[in-house]
Image 1 (cartoon, rainbow, N blue to C red):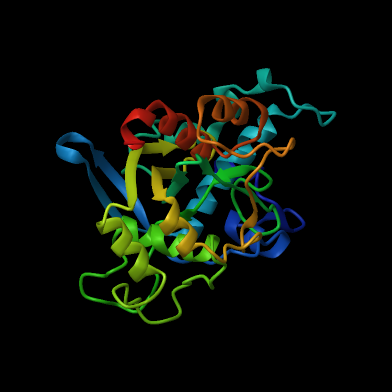
Image 2: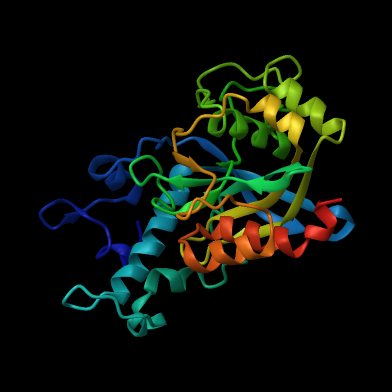
Length: 307
């Protein structure tokens, strides 16, 4: 680790800080989902001609070592000697590690892990609704306690077994796996098993057929970068016809490996896809940055996506 982070890292022994933040999290406050898997790294994004992403490989703990250090450095800078927070204390002089990154859009300078965040909308004649996930601090490493759109997941292979032209190097297939895990509570594809046969395995077969038939419509809203920890997200929205949504998610769980699924606010008002609901959520709830961006951008483009 860099000398600039020495005072930020917890001590593993008197006078000896941990060398890596990921090691400290593993030993001191390990989330339930915490594995050093291969992930896809964003190197470039070109939106001309329909959009093109250039990707490489990195490890999940590379993101932890960078992002947790950035977040804790900022928190330390904002904390007064008596333990209160004072944002005015945050200056570049107090952020030596963040200064090393310099330009967060210089994607060759540091490992930017890419996730996919999807706002899932069920459309019917009776109304258009969505659900959110209350992320559990005990289960996840990022945005614990906050609301997020669902599904949300790291863009990564489902299997560590090499495969020519890997079937996992596909944004939609990654999203389908997250639907299987977060909506249906199926076991996570954690890399230990063989590659997935998406053409014959449920719910992927039905979901893919519905998308090809136009009963699921997926739109990319852009790519967001979390200013706190420099994690990237492909921001998407998926519009489901009510019959295919109800068929696929007839047995949707109430809790999953990342948190609790919620469909109404504190006053038991449904999350309807309208300006009032989205504004209320964005102004009254703690929402993960990627989720807030999805909600904001999806409503901005509602005339396009609700065709």
